[in-house]
Image (tube, rainbow, N blue to C red):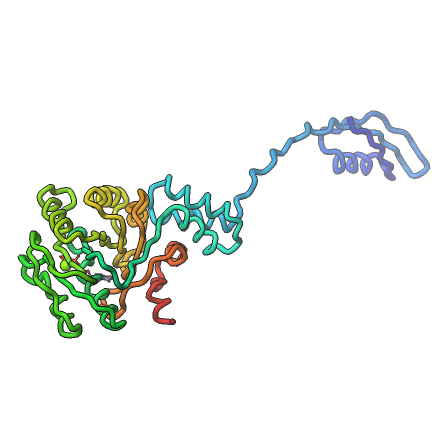
Length: 313
Ligand SMILES: Nc1nc2c(ncn2[C@@H]2O[C@H](COP(=O)(O)OP(=O)(O)OP(=O)(O)O)[C@@H](O)[C@H]2O)c(=O)[nH]1
Ligand SMILES: [Mg+2]
C-alpha cells in the first residue's frame, strides 16, 4: 500500500490533491490541522504489476527484405529457405553478396565453353528460345573467329529454320538441315538446333534422344523465365532423364519471376548461359551466382539487370 500525506490551505484543496495524485480509489486515513492549513493522510493500493513480455527478437530489416525478394519469385519453399539460410549465415552485410553466397551453395554453374569437341544440342519445349540461342551462340563464335558448324533438325515445320537462315547471311557456314535420325557428319565445334518437343510425350523424347545419341551430343536445355515452378520441375526431370545436365535461361527480359528456372535447376542441373533479348546481336550472358542474385533482388518493374549491365558495359 502506498501512503502519502498532503498539506493544503483547506480540506477541499487537500482532497483534490489526493485525487489528482493517487486517483479516485485513494482512501483517506486521517486528517489534522497544521499551521499551513490541513494535513491529510491518504493511501492507495498500487495497481497490480503489469509484466510486459519481452519483444520477439526483431528480424533485421535487410534479412526481411531478402526473404521477401526471394519468395517473390515463387520457387519451392524448401529451396527458398536453403538460399536464405546460407545467405544469412554468410555474414556478408551487402545483400547482393550475401544472396550470391546463398545461390552459389544451392545451384551449380557451368558456363558453355566457346569451342568444344563434343557437339552441343539445344533442346527444349516449343518456343523456348532455342533457335535464338543458337543464332546468338553462332554469331559470337563468328565474331571471335571460333570455327563452328550448325545444323537444325527443325526441318519439317514451315519456318522452323528461318532465324538460322537469316543468320546464314552473316556467318560463313550456313546451317545444315538435318533429319533427326541422321548424323551431323564431321567433328569439331558443332551446334545442333533441335525442334521443340513435348517433354511428356514418349515419341518426341525418343526421337530427340536418337538425335543426341547419333551425334554423341551434349543436350543443353533451353527454358524461358516466367514458367510455373511445379511444371518446370517436371520438365527439367524429363530432360534430365535423357541426359541433360545444363540449362540456358531465356527471356529474362520479359519475365518478372524466375522461380520456375530456380525450380528447374534445383535438382542438380547447372546454370550456364542466359538470354535476355530477342535481338541476336545482344548475345548470351554467362549466368553466374552474382548475376542471378542481382536479378532476384532487382526491382521487378525495372529494366532487367542483365541487359542493363551489358548496355552500360
Ligand atoms: N524477349 C525475348 N524474346 C526471346 C528471347 N529468346 C527468344 N525470344 C523470342 O521467343 C520466341 C521463340 O524463340 P525461338 O528461338 O524461335 O524458340 P524455339 O525454342 O527455337 O522455338 P521452336 O523451334 O518453335 O520450338 C521468338 O519470338 C523469339 O524472338 C529472349 O531472351 N527475350
Ligand atoms: Mg527453333
